[in-house]
Image 1 (tube, helix red, strand yellow):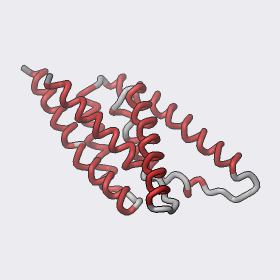
Image 2 (cartoon, helix red, strand yellow; image 1 turned 90 degrees about the vertical axis):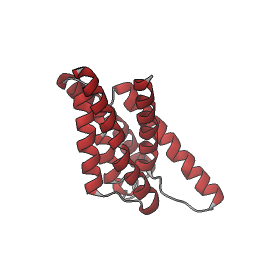
Image 3 (cartoon, helix red, strand yellow; image 1 turned 60 degrees about the horizontal axis):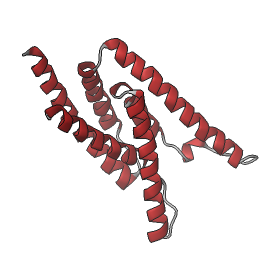
Image 4 (tube, one colour; image 1 turned 180 degrees about the vertical axis):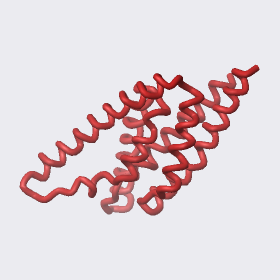
Length: 167
């Protein structure tokens, strides 16, 4: 009985996660900025979801592995930009916003390493697809809404988790 209540509570929190995620997706797409309030709400609800899903050592383990992956990927982007714009002043913040990094960091306790890799990889592919479509149809260079792209993949993952828990 108690396990069923925890599972229902976890599913409700995961459904609640859709609210801040949706607001962040819309805000990033529309304004290319995200609110710290909604990032905080997303982080808190994600932490509660993680607490109900994993033991404490699992949360720490997932967070550390995911942070290592995130640092490796961000380091790769930073290195690429350094080599690409050699001799020119290059501001990393022009290419990756702090909201993007905070959002990716807040995802770390909620998912396993494999799921996190899928989120980042799928989000980057979705962001590049958006960029290509906008480049072809609007004939202008746009920035990639990374929070929207990764948030969309995360939303799909939440629906998948919710559906498979009820099956």
